[in-house]
Image 1 (cartoon, helix red, strand yellow):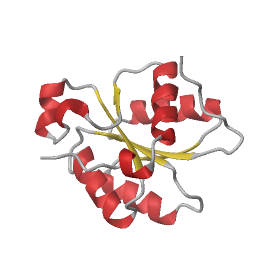
Image 2 (image 1 turned 45 degrees about the vertical axis):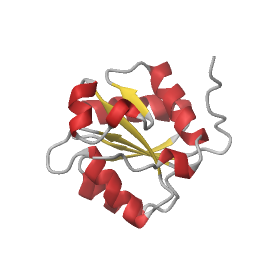
Image 3 (image 1 turned 120 degrees about the vertical axis):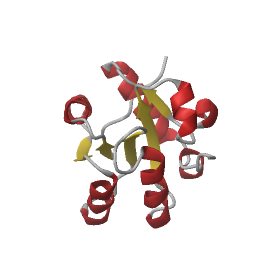
Image 4 (image 1 turned 90 degrees about the vertical axis):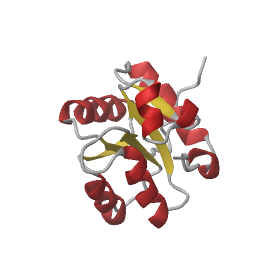
Length: 141
């Protein structure tokens, strides 16, 4: 059984997904647990949130398959500016599709959609517990 995060030192989380319903659901679930949550619809918006947030965002949860720039491209841009940023990928697509985006063997922190409240909190807790180097390994293409 996983221990869920200790919310006394409340981490800030950025949820990046082009689907508003997914962002809102993740925001609601994480907020109910006590996290400070930010949202972004696109990679460009995610970079802007990270650059202007008045607090350090400890974790970025990013959808892999998005229009404009996919989650792997977004993560690479984020890591150019914040190399120690922790990232948790999420997707509803099967592994074959995700390999096309560079997530080979899902060797990165990953959350399958749709997810339950407990699955989300456990994956977030695990991602926050990882060292920044482990959490931000660049997927191979």
